[in-house]
Image 1 (tube, helix red, strand yellow):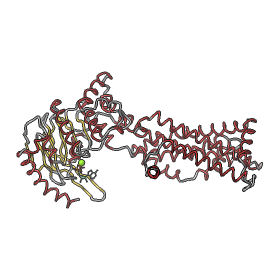
Image 2 (cartoon, protein in one colour):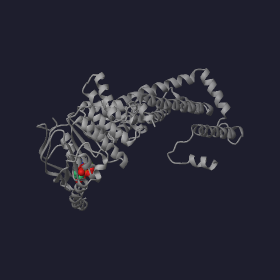
Image 3 (spheres, rainbow over the protein chains, first blue to last red):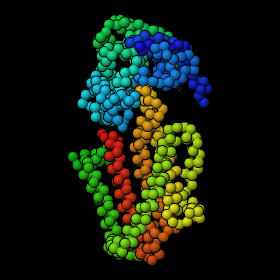
Image 4 (cartoon, helix red, strand yellow):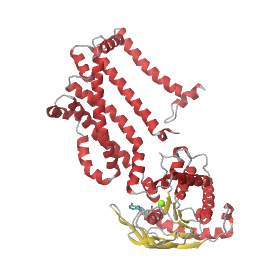
Length: 260
Length: 267
Ligand SMILES: Nc1ncnc2c1ncn2[C@@H]1O[C@H](COP(=O)(O)OP(=O)(O)OP(=O)(O)O)[C@@H](O)[C@H]1O
Ligand SMILES: [Mg+2]
């Protein structure tokens, strides 16, 4: 459960000022179940758009996305998403935020609170159940967002630069936390970032995207041993991967700069 | 140290000690009152122009004891709450949907914006022609004065609900209808409360205008009568009562927001 197929997907926007903007062009990739797949690419190459397509929040111009063979036509609870901005509901407490998806689907209150407790615990926020989002730091908010997505038990977890707004210490703590949870939960993850260290530290496989129109220009089978610890980023293999991604990204970032 | 305290009081957007906040307000209010005493008891201005606090108090006691003040106040309160509630129960849902759904905006925005820029005072003669000078006229003036403003302000609030909140709800399995009830509505509530609070102040203005133009009772009418009878003290009684009722309403709205939407008031 949780296989994702992206089959020759294209996405174009009709804009008033710039005419037709092609964000993605015939992009294909396949994520087997329980894989942690990471996408890196220059700004504006269509990473967020790609996740939106898998989530069903946008419609493809051509091609299709499939999850477990089923063509994506609309958003659904089988594909949970974590956004970069803190998309918590400010009027709900941490607990109610985490229970949100369960309450939509009429899960009985007892099971709801058990699941919420479990995931609030696994992101290390016990004791903050009754706090409101405005009382939390950025890192804590993202932990709530992760707990909320997981409590819904999706097949696939889509993450759009979830740690992009955090400082570097918090960010590495969050990466380790996420890996810890993922190793237990074994969900398919599609994770977008522009941080190469983050991509290699987290991913089973890292896809490198071109500047707009976005295509996959390199695929790296990371294959570093798990569980991973942060000192992995100093190993020669890691550095070699990093050099490889940087060189392909460098050319693309230059292209992107000229484009935008 | 003293310079440090003073410095701390004049930083944009920074909180100041509760005590200082309180006493600053009291001092300013007391100074205004002091100036009033000075001008009247000091004989700087004539009593026909500006009555002394004592005269206003006497007028207050006499209108209170003969029942006229309560009668007029009751009429005004009835008119304003009826007009305001009628306006709000239609404007709040309509405004929320106008901001939340482009199709609703497309349908009603032209009419709303046309009406919004018509000063309601310009409509009063027409309204008198249509519904007379009774309760209906006051309700109509308050309604027309507040309704279109409320719609626009509330549509602005609901239009600002961030896309990510909708998107995350869809990915948590929300249906279209659930997104409306569980995201759009709660997200707009603080803005709706603020809009109601602000427009309530305007409603008072429209009410008094309507009563000044054509009425047989109400605080505005009482003020007008006092002017005709050359009773400036009674005019001031009317003004103070209106100000006091406005203050109480404002506090009630603030209190209601804190109680109903506790999350808006947390640091
Ligand atoms: N609604 C839209 N209308 C027109 N163009 C759009 C729209 N949404 C996105 N685009 C364009 O599509 C391209 C891809 O956008 P997207 O947000 O997916 O990029 P991204 O890779 O996530 O960028 P970033 O790293 O900055 O988040 C961009 O060039 C953007 O300008
Ligand atoms: Mg993006």
